[in-house]
Image 1: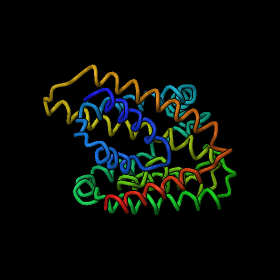
Image 2: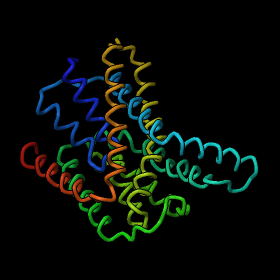
Image 3: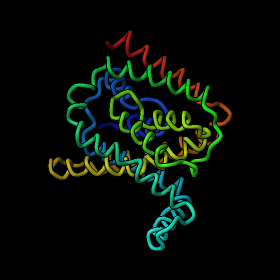
Image 4: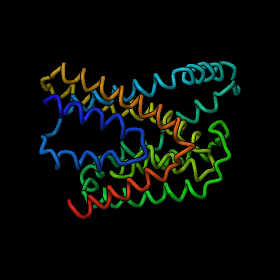
Length: 265
């Protein structure tokens, strides 16, 4: 991999992991536009580690509180502080974990076509716009009940379909349930942590079993770039979200879907 490919792919991973746009649509477009070969499993693991480190660092204070409250709630057998939110993150990860184990091979074999990705990019973009327009936006993430978490968790499982966008559909579900934009985004980002750990862990296991040669300089650079771009993305997104809303991303998704339809399919 040359420096340009490392830079583009790492930054793209950092941005699309957390913005409500489709990462799979971008990853289809990039090799078509550039003619680059697949970046390889090792690089995928590296950029996953980078994005994970970014979200953990950004939410480090919140995570410390959630972990402490979680273990105290187990010890005291009652709700402690924000322990309910910690349980919500764990509970909300179960649907995507089960769906990945049961349907991962089917999705990989049959749903990674440009037609599917273009369709889901547009449909779930419109749904995001509708949720942003009509959602009551009155609730904080601490008010989520187990039924709400189940709905958001199932939505996250649907994001296994390429073109859906994990962050996009979880924010959409949160907005539909009445969360404010910031609350929907915060819960989506917190929910991403165990998902990225699971996805990165599976890729790491595949990498260990494959015995591939590793270009450590490329991996470390990719990890650093994805971490920096992801951290900046989260920070800027959270600061601007209440001002700009979701519609800039809705419009972008519609344009991206149109590009896929007219130039690739």
